[in-house]
Image (tube, rainbow, N blue to C red; front, side, top):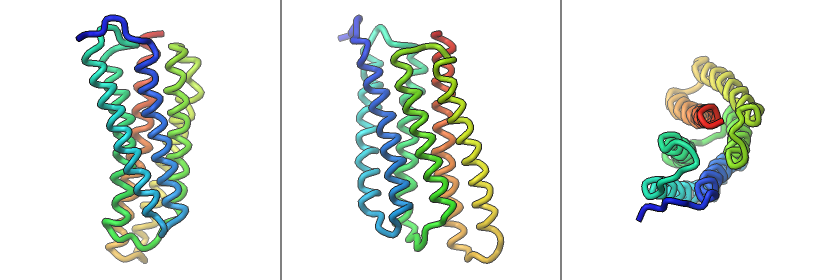
Length: 207
C-alpha cells in the first residue's frame, strides 16, 4: 500500500543512520591502521557496519518505492543513499584486502589518509544531519567546504604516497599492493565529496 502521508522523520532517520555507519566504518579503518598487525577485530567491525548500511539502504529505497510524498526528489534520495552505501562498501573492500594480499607492514602515509577519511566522514555526517532542519545552502556551506578541502588534502597525500612507491627501492609486489590500497582509500574520500555535492544539489533545488 502506498503511504500518502509518511512521517517526516523516517527518511531523515535512515539518512542519519547511514551516515553514522559511514563514520563508524572510517574510524574502524583508522583503528586497523593504528593497531596493525592486530587487524581482525577492526575488519569484523567494518564488515558488520557494511551489513547494517546495506540494510538501511535497502529500507530507504524500499520506502522510497512505497511513499507518495518524499522530503525531496526521489532521484536525489536514491543518489544520497547509494553514495553513502558506496563509501561503506569501499571501506569494507579495502579492509578485507589487508588479509587477502598478506600485507606485512603499515605505511605511514596510509595512516594519514585514514585520518583524512575519518575527518571527511565526520563533516559529511554533520551535513547529512543538517538536512533535517534546513534547506539553506549557507547553513551547510561550512561543512561542504570542509569536505572539499579535505578531499584536496587527500589528493595531495595520495600523490605523495604513490610517488614514494615508485622511487625504485620498494619491491614490485609491495608496490602493487599499496598502489591499490591508496587508490581505494582515495576513492572512499572522493565518494564523500560526491555525496556532499548531492547534498548541495538538494539544498539548491529545495531551498
